[in-house]
Length: 147
Image (cartoon, rainbow, N blue to C red; front, side, top):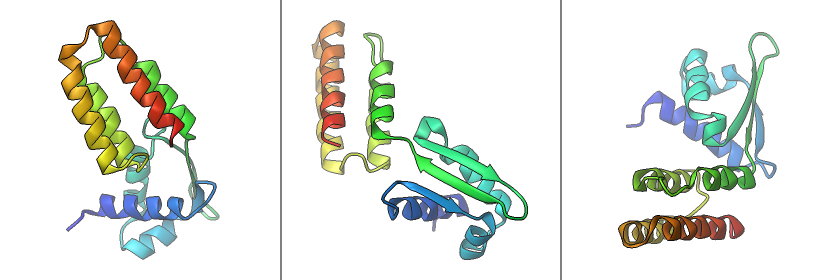
């Protein structure tokens, strides 16, 4: 069974995905009633799972008339951030984390992630650092262009 934080995250992600503009305004009390949890648990999820680093902008106001506005960061920003992090000294595990992040956010499918991971794993030790960096950046640019 999922823990409360997973349920809250799933609920918010579902609400976000149902909006065309990838923005949603929610109330803590509504979420708490729906999931049967304390509003502080919602705050925890917002602070740990809906961060800018994870692709979200959150505006929150507590109290009467309070709200939570959550927006997903545009894909261009996410991919550009990844491209900026890819250098000749970037470790394979960091590249794999980036692919998993794209998969978790449903920016790529499982099949794409598997192919990309296999390619990176194979090419990582076989190519010189400069060529490997160009290839990795090229793959991420291709993913960005088709997202």
